[in-house]
Image (cartoon, rainbow, N blue to C red; front, side):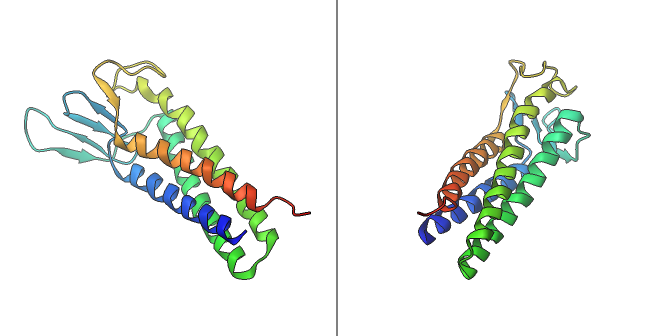
Length: 168
């Protein structure tokens, strides 16, 4: 049982790191030419072969909701790690149940962010339609890291669920 808790905690930690790194980098959407890198916290542009300029973007509704979901999801994952650590120290099955629910909330928020994010492809900088990027743009490393964090959170929740099963 303790091994599963440790594995779950380690996976939640990896998911938290990937989600935070994805937020820190401005590569959620990148242009094919490499002159624009759009992120939730930073946007970087290169105009006419000059040096790159990065700034905090004005987010539309969908991307603002995505940012909120990812931030609150990261807080939930961090709280889950804390609760799992607390359950290991005190060997209290009730704390593990709370950890499972907080982890489930993080997983739900990450899934919601993954569904809502493509709705913002109609932004002025991109010029696409919801859920449809134009040919000159593609998803970048930050979005891939976020999706990886989402999947690791799902697997972590499966391990946490196995820990919280009743023992007969």
